[in-house]
Length: 185
Image (cartoon, rainbow, N blue to C red; front, side):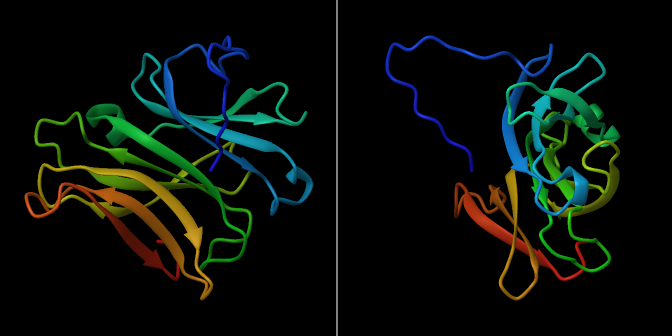
């Protein structure tokens, strides 16, 4: 998790990563990608004219500058909405996914008429340039939300996704849910 404290009254500094509105930034410094180790990658949930997408930006100068290196263009998200994306680098093999595989996931479907949300997962094996759909980690059984997926690898080697789940209303407004996998799917 990346956090920063800005003194009260401080002026905004820096440059936007791209031309489109963006939210939910996530950052990783590659550590399991051979020659790309040390590169900083960031993703934002962006809103280009073709529909929402996950833009991937890279920096080889310690974060002083970024260029777009890839984009996750999920056709389901383009039709039904996208929010709350995340980016994660696998530190070890999970099933057939080698160390260094990048995982990107987002909350999809909040803009659909039936609002059946899902958490869709994509993978990259070339440091974020190209992306392939991997799986749907969770799907809402009703019109309530699934939000903010985040990944980790548990001590026993399972890939774990944590996310906010609003599907058990009215008993629970929202709770933290967990899905795990030994093969990454």
